Every structure is written in structure tokens, then in C-alpha cells.
Image (tube, rainbow, N blue to C red):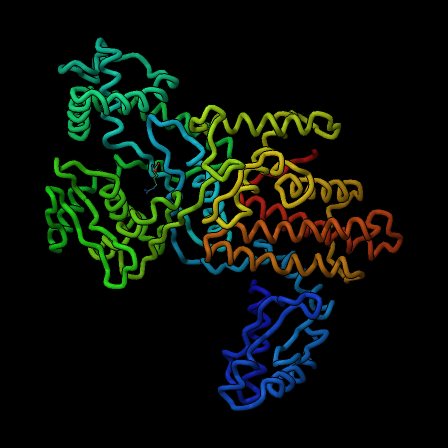
Amino acid sequence: MKKITDILTQKVSAAFEDAGYTADLGAVTVSNRPELCQFQCNGALGGAKKFRKPPMAIAGEIASALASDAAFKEVSAAPPGFINITLSDDYIVSLLGEISGDPALGVSQDGAGQTIVIDYGGPNVAKELHIGHLRSAIIGEALKRTARAVGCTVYGDVHFGDWGTPYGLTIAEYKVRHPDWACFRDDFDPARDSFPDIDEKELNQIYPYASAKAKEDPDFKAEARQVVVDLQNRKPGIFAIWKKMKDVSVASTKRIYAGLSVDFDYWYGESDADVYTPELIEILKNKGLLYESEGAQVVDVSEESDKISVPPIIVKKSDNSSIYATWDLAAIIQRERDFKPDKIWYLTDKRQNLHFTQVFRCAKKAGLVPETTELRHLGFGAMTGPDGKPFKTRDGGVLSLGSLMEMVDGAALEKLKDSEYIVGDKREVAHKIGVAGLKFGDMQNHPTKDYIFDLDKFLSFDGKTGTYLLYTVTRINSILKKAGEQGGGPITGIFSDAERELALGLLMTPEAYSRAFCDMNPSALCDAAYTVAQSFSKLYHDTKILSEEDSAKRSSLLSLCSLTGRCLEKMLACLGIETVENM
Ligand code: ARG
């Protein structure tokens, strides 16, 4: 189904054309003065210059041409030349019917035929997930679902940080602590030898320890560097312990992501991308792009129009080892080969903006993807404490994602303490409410902005919160349950201002999907969902629904409730938020 603004644009464009003007003047947008009208077109203002005619005259002409269209209750010209549009209730009702009968609930399939790889999450082996990874995971998951909702084929890839210096340090420290492990013997044979399981707690502690130690202990640092070389050469014992470390990290990451309803189609890591590094170097060399600078192999990616300096991208360090950027480039080769994507999107915090500018320019220069492939980075802001500084634990440490989730679940459970409505496991319901609060609290902000982590606010039943939205859905479900019908019949009319407002909010939801997708900004969906929920609450307070005596009216109202519930659930699902039965 087409978006409402597209349908109206088509009508108004035709009117402009029929009257001897040009169709491009007919663009219709949602009114920015809702008290005056529902939609507006500003084309007469632009047309005035082009056709040397007063804007009000053009606006008047178009308005009267449209007056006979039954879709409109009113079309009028307003100074200095706006065309104000209000839809007829019958037309609104017919559009609601179309949305309700559409399996996509009116969401236009603008992305059909497009393939996107979304690179998000970005956890690292041997480094516990921390809140820096939270935003990437939840915004990325929402964008993946939104892209699918508009018809794209989407592959989510976690791009695990699993190759390079940190793992050399970690393994070197294991060797100090457990010199007896078979994997450290030169004659290690994976078919014959085994070594103890990796303890998850030790794994999470060992990297920060080893990294600090390397700063003070040059011998240890040299040892770690040798381990990196051994690892990159896939020496059996070193490769075996690395593999075990990775398995433990992946398992714990999967567990935490599952609790956040975040999942990936591919769990590729830097190590998988590294397979393509030799090919990358070949391409860069053949194209004459690679040159030596201070011992390193680099590619120049500056452009004349640069306002800030964009330094050459380092592809190989002076010791010939590969780094973060190498694997990002190599992964592009793999993705192009496996998926032929139209777009590759990356989500990390905005401190990596420059890195991705370098990577994208290098990829295009080297022709790793066609010129038309969109390579786009969403650099998001930080989640901060009340002081505006990146969120920390009480003792100033980095908060692990696991601890954060415990905190969120605990607070949600406390909120539900006195609720008598929960059926089933209170902890499970509390977890869903906690995740909803956290996700909505995050994504209702523009992703590039910092926001304050305020759990109390996120879990509040009032205001623009995930909790309020879940509550609204449970309220709708309870009405439908009490009515004993799921609102399967058609919506037959609009009987009040509150219903009209809700109906318009529902007509507007497909616009939100398009905006969230095109701008990589889930807050568009949060706004639309909140608007619908608020309008529903108003309707609920102002209108008799269950006790309505006129049975036709009652049935239509219930259908409106049902459609509202379905639209809300779909938006929440796109945001990666699960609803609950009762709360
Ligand atoms: N592992 C990285 C980090 O923790 C994020 C990876 C993001 N994705 C990418 N293709 N570089 O910062």
C-alpha cells in the first residue's frame, strides 16, 4: 500500500498538471498546524515565481479543483499561498480498511529488491560486553527489523572482534598463569592433546590485566607480539586456545543478546574477514594505491573538499601485521562476494566516524564494491550518567552489560511488586518491561545524540516510555477480551474527534517506517507509537467503548481498538520490544 502522503501528492500533483502547472508542485506533507488542517501543500508558493502569478490565486485554483474529490472534507487556500487539506471521514475510514486488510499493515514496501548488510553489535572476544555495545545492539536490531518491514532483504552480521593484538596479550597471560597447558607445548597436537576449559570469569579479567602489564613489562609485550604472529600463522596450540576463548565469548555474548531480543544471521568475526586480506593487498597493489609511509603500508584517502584532515588509511603496520581497518576492508570483499549488497550499514559509537570515512573511501577507490553501493556509518552518541559523562559504575569502572541487565530487571521487578494482574512468571514479565523501558528510553532519542540513563524515568507508567506503551497494549487487549471479540469486523465510521485523531495517527504510522529506514533513525517509530498510544488513551477516557449501546458503533470502535493494538505491536516489534499479556 502507498503512504498517505504519496496518495495525496498524486492527487494534488494531478490537479496542478490539469490546471496547466507542473506536477512537481503537488508535494503534500503532514500539516505543521494541525489545528488548521491535517495536510498541506506549499506548491503554489514555488509555482508563483515559475508562472508569474500570485500564489494565492494558484492555491485558490487548485483548492477549488480538488473540492469535488470525495477524499476531501475541505481544501482551502490560506495566505500567503498554502493549500490546506482536511480528509473526509469516509475517506479516512476507507484508508483504515485498506491498512487493516494489508498483511504489512499499510507499510509500503519501498525497500523491495534491495539487499542490505547491517554490521552491528561489534562485541570482542575476551572483553566482556559493556554498555558501549548496548546501543549498537539495540539500534542495529531495530534497523534490521525496520528494513525488513519495508521489504528489504537484510543480513545482520555481528563482526566479532576476534583477531589481533588483544588476543596475543590474553593468550600470553594464560601462558604465564598456566604454563602446563598442552596448548603451549610446541608439539601440541589437537587430535591428541586437550587442555582445561576456559573459565569465563578469568577470561573477562585477563585482558585488562594483560594489557596493563604489557605497558610496564617489555618482555611480556614482546612475548605477546610473538603470540600474535603465531596466531595469525594459525600455530596449532595457539589457535586451539584462541578457538576455545572465542567459543566461550560467543556463548556468553549470545546469552546476553538473547535477553535483549537481539540476534544475528551471521556471527562472522575479524578472523573470517582476515582470510580475504591477501586478496585485498593484491587489489590495492595492482591499482597502485598502496604505498609505504613510516614503514607502514597505507592508502591515501583525502579529498580536496575535506574540511578536516583525513589521514591515509593504514592497511598493514610496519611489522606487516593487519589491523582493524584491514579487516573492515577485507570484510567488504567477503560481503560483496556473498551478498552483492546494495547497502552496507555500520553501527558504532561516533568516535569511529573518521575510521569509517577512511574505510569507505578506500573501498570505493579500490573498487571493492560498485560505485553505487551505499556504505554508511551510523555513529551514535553515548549513554551518560546524570552528570552527562559516559555511564560508569559507582566505583568509576565500566559497567558490564550483564550487570546493567541485572539492574534493569531488578528495578522492573520492584515496580511490579504489588501488581495483582500478572499471570505467569513475574520475573519474565519484569524482564520484558525492563528491556522495553531500556530500549525505548534509548531509541526515542535521535541516535547521534547523547542521552541520560535514567532507569526511574524509563520504567515510569506515564510519559513517553516503553512501559507506557506496553501498558497501552495490555489495556487494548483487555478491552477486546472483555468484549469477547477480536474486533474482526470493519471500522464503519468516525463518531468523535478522539476517534479521528487516533485514526489519523494510524494512517501516519507507515510514514514513520519510511523515515526510520531512510534516516537510520528508530526514533521516528518511537514518536509514531507514542502518538498513537496517547490518542488511544484520550479515546479511552472520553468514549464509552464496552458500554456503548449502539451495537454497530460498538463493533466499529472495537475494530478501531484492534487495529490500534496491531499497529502498536508491529511498531514495538520493529523496535525489538516484546509486549506482555498483563501488567
Ligand atoms: N569490535 C569493535 C569495537 O568494539 C566494533 C566493530 C564494529 N564493526 C566494524 N565493522 N568495525 O569497537
